Amino acid sequence: MRTPAQNAHLALLLEVASTPKPGNVDRHRDLADLRFEHFLAGAVGAQRGLEMAADGAAIGPAFERAVAGMAEQEGDNTQFGALLLLTPLVRAAATDLSQPVVESLVEETTVADAAAFYRAFEHVDVHVADPPADMAPLDVRRGSDAIPALEKRGLTLVDVMEQSVPGDDVAREWVTGFERSFAAAEQLADADGPLPDRAATVFLSLLADRPDTLVATRRGEDVAREVTDRAAELAAQDAISTDRDAVEAFADELVERGINPGTTADITAAALFIALESELVSI
Image (cartoon, rainbow, N blue to C red; front, side, top):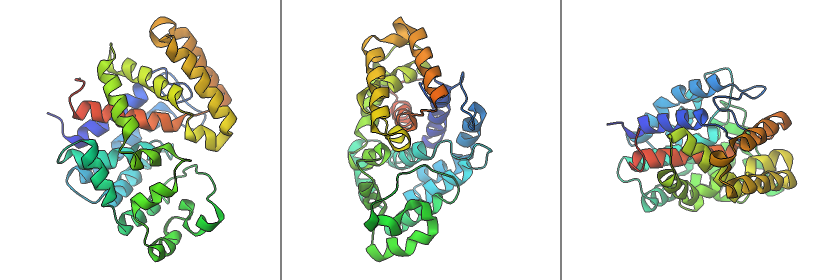
C-alpha cells in the first residue's frame, strides 16, 4: 500500500505522462526550456518535502522543502503550483483526506508558514502578476526580503492565498476547499481507459471550464478565454475519444504559440492525488 507521499509523487508523474494536454509538457511534447525529463526529476526531488507533510510537518516548511528539491534539475520551475496544492492535501491525508479537513488545515496556517512560502520563491523563477501598489512590499518575488512586511501585517499563508484571488486559481483552490480538485477526482473515477488518458480528458474538461490563470497572466484575458472556448468545443465532442487528432493538433498549436495552461495542469495533479489516495482509481 502506497503512502500519501508516494501517491503524491505518483500523481506528479502521471500528470506529466498524460497526453495530449494542450500547451503543456507531456510524454510527447517538450517546451523550449522545459523537457519531459525535467518534470520527472522535479517530482523525484520534491519527495522529501511531501514526506514531511505526510509526517505532520507544518505546511509552509514542507512546501518550501518540496520546492527546493524540485528545483534541483536544469528546468527550474516544473511543479511549483502543483506542490502548493499537494502539500496541504498530503498533510490532510495523514488524518482524513476530505474537504473539511483540508479547509481546517489551511485555516490553521501561520505567519511562519507564509514566510516559508515566500522563501520558496528564492529557489525557482515563478511567473506572477504585478501586485497592487499597496501590496508591493509583499510581492512574492521579493522572497525573504518581504518577510518583515509579512510579519508586520500578521498575514498567515491562507491570508496570502486570499490576497491572490481571483488572479490565481491555485490560490483559489485554497480558499474554496479545493473544490475543483475534488470534483476533478470524481471525474477521473467516472472516466474510462488507462489513467493517463483519463487525466488528459479531465485536463481538457478543466481547461474548458475556466480560463487558465497562468495564461491570463502571461498572455492576457482574451487569449485565455480563446483557449478555454476552443477547449470547450473539443470537450463537448469528447474529442479525446472521438477525434483525438483534433486535440493533438490543438496541443501542438498551443506549444508553438507558447501558450501554457499550467494552472490547469496543477489542478489535474491535485485531482490525481485525491483519486489515488481515496482509492477512487487504482493502479
